[in-house]
View 1 (spheres, rainbow, N blue to C red):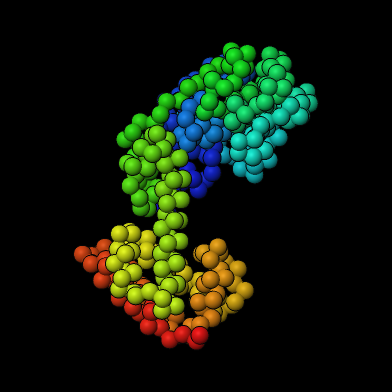
View 2: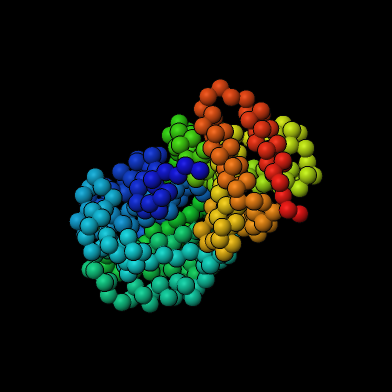
Amino acid sequence: MAVSETVIAGPGSALYPWQKPSWQKLIQYASTGRVPHALMISGLDGIGKLNLALCFANHLLCGSPKASEIRCKACDACRLIDAGTHPDLIRIEPPEAGKAITIDRVRDLSATLALTSQYNRYRIVLLRDADRLNSAAANALLKTLEEPGKGTVLILLTARCHELPATIRSRCQRLDIPVPDHRLAADWLKENLSSGDCEALLAMASGAPLKALAMGVAGNLEGRNTLFSRWREVAANHSDPVRIAENLSSLPLRDVLVWITGWTIDMIRLAMVPSARSLSNPDLRSALQGEAQKLDLKELFRFYEHLLQSASRVGSPVNAQMLLEALLIDWYSMKRNR
Ligand SMILES: [Zn+2]
């Protein structure tokens, strides 16, 4: 899967294209020196609330941020941010998805906030899934929301703000994030997902691009696993390669070739060094090792050549089913020790 710079750099490094209007509001707080001590960012799951909050936290923590940039990336604070060890960025979230944030966690937070800030600038508390605070924890948090201490900014993130007590909501400045602009979301998804019906995925995710991406990637994995089972059935003479090629011709050819090439390279690695550590498909190690053991290394290299030739023809008008048939027949006919 092609992955955007944002995803590679990690959350809090860059904004998603649809986040600019929300960012402008946040940056205005910072540039006018009126950063609220409690901010509630609410909106659907999968639209990048955490990324937006981390960008803002990083902007506030940076020693010399320019208004137009998220942070300078050069100061001491930025180095700590890069290392993930800035002591003035405190993150709180449920211990597991769906579990509650308990009062102990909020008490720990109060104790930490009672100590002096390390850098005398801002101290940011990022509270993810704030609606998972149980009632005792929510009550304990009220006091912190009332007297957070100088420079402390609590950012609560939630997709279900109505589930938070009114007493908490009323103490926070609200920033409601709308569903992203459809065009921006669809374009971003197309750039980040090598295959799949982006429009359908976005619709299924109620317009939330990150959720749609996760669904698309999971679907990709399903496709890979289906292909892998069929591919092994062909090797074991349990399936007819021509029929399998016909069944698989609906999968994106480029993905199919990338997958089979990845398995072949892994088999070559395993045939040469059975304990090879870096595999493209570590989750398939034992199955690939089993296949590699049956095959001659020379045969594997020859099959790899066949794959490379096939890949070079993908851009040209080529019959996907015939190309796949040729590959699967080759794979089926390889000499195996049984
Ligand atoms: Zn900086």
